Image 1: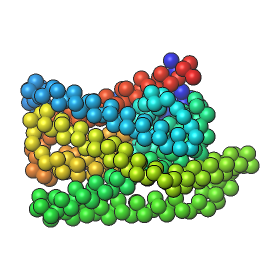
Image 2: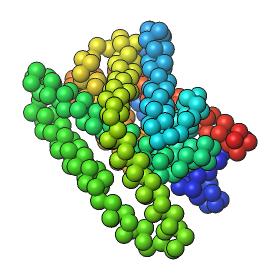
Image 3: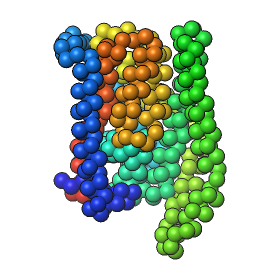
Length: 338
């Protein structure tokens, strides 16, 4: 069954080869990375840790990862219904999985996958491109707001309980400042519609008309979603649940491997890793996420040999398992399944 390309990822053969190359780099790079981490921890130590691990907690961590995907689908369905599009939850679950696959083979945090999601619901369910993008951007707005609040709460807790050194507080203060700037820029971009109009006006007539139409639908849909009574409360609740699963999963991995780490520390490291992985260097933050987790946890006094095993297991669940499941979902969403 053929993988179906999107307009955002041109269907010409050069682009297809490009994504094949990305996938090959991903597999080779991932294999090297796993080998380096296991070598650092020691093969015998890694095998022994897995033998002694509490399997029910590992299964719970896996379940939380797929619950995370389900919550994204539920939240997205809620927004789509508000713009007049009713799509079965199981279909959206598959689309979200496929979007995760695209996220994990393209650089940057959730850039490729979000465009792919918008394309799929337009192609399969007739959702206007502007409406689809609007719902996804509203998701990102709530994600960023809740994640920012989690980060501040975790940072303040560790700072005021004396569990961070001065160097750690300085480094995390820099992350906090950068995040605040990004939040302000994002808010300003939402207000500066004329910048996009000026950019779109450079395109030929037919293309320009389509882009301006999509922008108009996007503007109306996004502003309507944010202002509709009741939507912010529901979105905050679902987004808090979403990010809670993201934080609890690695905490269960630590517990399964017999490593005691404060829950707040896990929350802070998870959030910092998410922000750092947003830098578009490698597909799905590969290497960047692992390095950030290792450095940040190590700064809290956890031995790197122990961390290497924990990170390999956690990334196997949150990255490799999700990439495989997403790849199968992308194949299932081929043209033959319309």
